Image 1 (tube, rainbow, N blue to C red):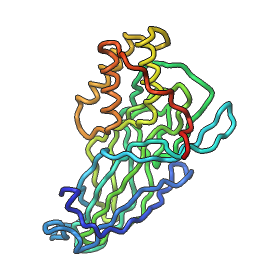
Image 2 (image 1 turned 135 degrees about the vertical axis):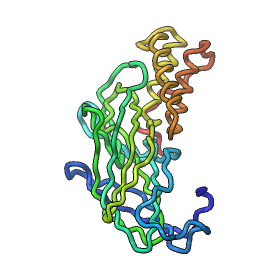
Image 3 (image 1 turned 180 degrees about the vertical axis):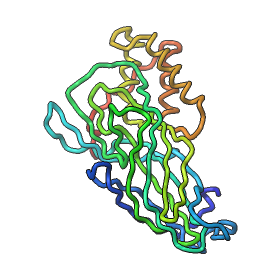
Length: 276
């Protein structure tokens, strides 16, 4: 069903899901379509159980990021740009259906970019799903869930996903994963593979690469750029649901492997955006 055809009568809920290991709570944005609010053909029929109505990584949003400099805490960054994974589910049964869990199965985590130096800062974005480094792939992060879908109702669950921490000098990471939602009646739905990269992690890499190409100095080499651009194009060619941030980053790497840019690079990004 096209998203533009959805009922405008939506109730926005926020569901708290416990983080892995009982740490902080994960927040998912939930949009409820009440029974009767769906267009013809989308109301509850004779079926039963949980139905996957759609999944994508088309949107981006801002999250707050904590950070430290030389080990000392700094004021949070309010505008850390993040990709959003959205899963739409529907209850085709005649009775309410309780969702009991969400699982995020990470198949790949690909560093993409050329080394550009390091510093003493450490970024800790407040993603809904924070992916630890050093885990053996594939692995699953699970979240308990206690949400009820009314008969014929549907909800969008939106999650920000990204690295648990981004030390200064770290490379952007492309995550490919699926999301599985489980219900109390035994119903389960799993999304197609979702592939995303958070745009905030790419800015210093592209700036350093552009400076190296233009000036002929710095740690980024043309050979590395060509290799990383080819890897980015391979990720795009794999198809599926791919976030806009990855598409833009791949285009930026491809541009830098062509003729030498004549324009000046964009200003060096700061850890803390300017506040109005």
